[in-house]
Length: 232
Ligand code: FES
Image (cartoon, rainbow, N blue to C red; front, side, top):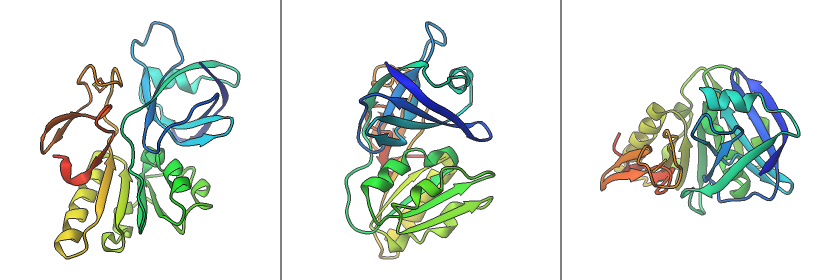
């Protein structure tokens, strides 16, 4: 059980939650959180935004009952965290880009800290948020509002690209990775899929992902997948 340090509204329906306690994890992993009793039945999965000495941070978008209840949390409230779960981003070296769209920037701040010198691309349809927090870690920080953030990324420049955002963006990243490889610049593109989850531990199949080798589970086999494995 953690204690809420702060729960700040950043933009339209987007919040930054800080929880005290001894929580850690790998980049790209997630926790299952709940701040209520029996109902809603399911905990909500949130990816690790940042790990600090005194606690852990998350970003979330209010999209339903559970996240609405999160938005009402105030400092000192208790919140239950289980995790970390899932298979996150790999440890990599070389030229690395992190590309996030909207709330998909959530898992990338922790990555940026772990990969000094990476290039960071953040895209938003309207109000940007948490962009300056990336600046200390990024060799180059590009923020786009209202456009397509992937249009700013030359895939041929990188060895590894980590992407998190809405499904059309992930699919576009997959295609750009294939195009770069076809033109002689192979790049490993990793996608963090934000599928709906129920159990979070591989027991219910709610989070099924179509992959070349069959159905896999976003919560246990992912949420990070090599782009070329995913069938959109
Ligand atoms: Fe239950 Fe993934 S959320 S198997």
